[in-house]
Image 1 (cartoon, rainbow, N blue to C red):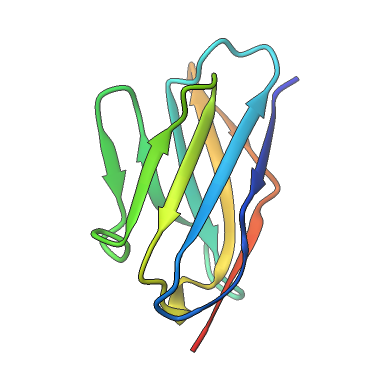
Image 2 (cartoon, rainbow, N blue to C red; image 1 turned 90 degrees about the vertical axis):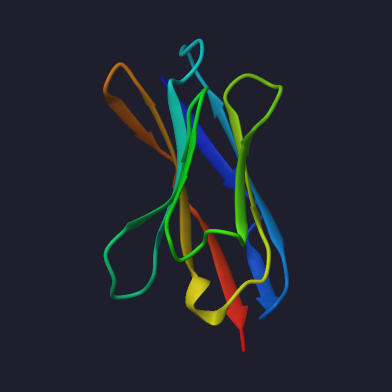
Length: 114
């Protein structure tokens, strides 16, 4: 059974930084694609950033501020978030995909105060 566990969320002032981490455990050797999504209260879940072995993709709203990376450890992914804005407040969820199957973490809350 695959499990994704996020960490690193918290409360930060606007302009600050946070680094989110996601570690996957289970029987998957290596995920083809990993990424971060977020869901703010009353809003739909939206893509933040995804990463494969050859490319990275970012939502326009976070380009230049957020950086996604994969760790040396198997199936880990990070999200470095700089210049945070109040509108970045959301639950951030880790996603992993292999062979067309999606796996999700439970999320970590990021709150940005103005």
